[in-house]
Length: 510
Image 1 (cartoon, rainbow, N blue to C red):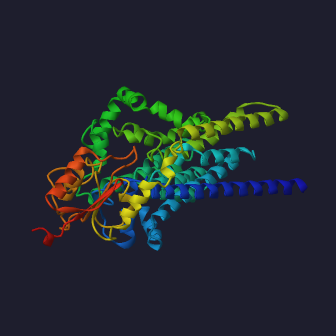
Image 2: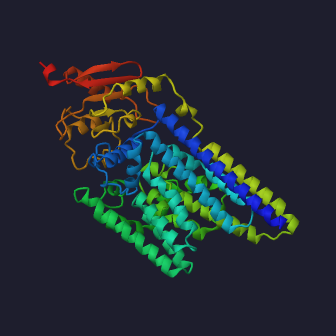
Image 3: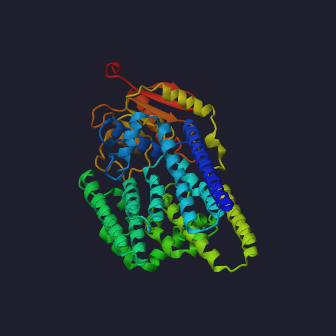
């Protein structure tokens, strides 16, 4: 009786420890995200996401001027609907950071629960949970602006945790995951194939069928409806070297396996990526290859792409890999521990040694591969105060075009552009003659009125952006000089950190 009560007491203490760790993670990354935003180190992705959620929350239409398309044309973020309902209650950028940190932090609870179920060891579930909370790719994702698709991480974890035990939760988490972005369906379909091959025939077939139907409905039917009948331009831009239609792309990839192997693993760095994402887990995922292969569809989507950012761990593109990595790591550890035969005395030092090695690898990986080497992004400087003062001068509902680090602070309006926009290949494809777009993106012959007939009322230029962001080039300087010279704009504010131009009223032009 005493031992039973002691066991319960230990479990309760471990649960409290996990809860404290998760809450600490949430508060830490909420604060750090807020500091990055205040120091003007957030960018385009946050601006586009917040404008879309703001439009949903307050019924402001669905044409996203930062993306140059309808909110549903190139990405099917159905989960933005409940996010918009929450955002309506508190329309602040900080709320998005808090929701993102809470969601990613909650994944640790699922990791802990699954490890507890799989391994009768009071220490390992805590160890793997700590490894999750200090995982470098998770940190990068949490601090890189805001992305609806990263909300899929705990949902995919939930689907995998309950895959064989609770079909209702399996399908519920799978649907929630697919609501975060259309391509999550590929990962869910792989889970369905895994279940089928493991003997769970009806679960596997049902999940595979649901995911394929979801993919077809979103990508082939719904997105073209919002994109003037065309398929997402991202597909053509990222994979145009293989063909100009999805069928040609798939055919080329399947008929050139050796070339694709070279491109994925050598040219695009697939081998290096696999090492970087597994070293912080002690390479345990490779001990459960039949589970790890679930990440194959999303891995190929990223590494067949010619868009180089998809090959990096410091952005959000590898988000769906994280749940698969941790589930396979837990199963891999269970497999390793089960195959090693020790006496009762021998198991204790083995556990202590293995857990120590795992934590050391996790900490070293987090230090060298994580986002904390550059602390400047979390510091308030003269530049950040100058930019904040400039943003405060801009009226709330006017149309603006602003530098990458400034536009996230001005996104809650119907007409907001980024100057310059790096994604001209895929954005604004439906209206390439829009004069404001041409002016503030490509630097073509200046035009002054959008199809809405309003024009850009304020232009805000960050004179000293951080190294990773778009600098003020000679071409942009030339455009600015032309705008002032032809008297369409006048200088509203000019200091070493920021330049604001204000559109000249028609009656001022004589």
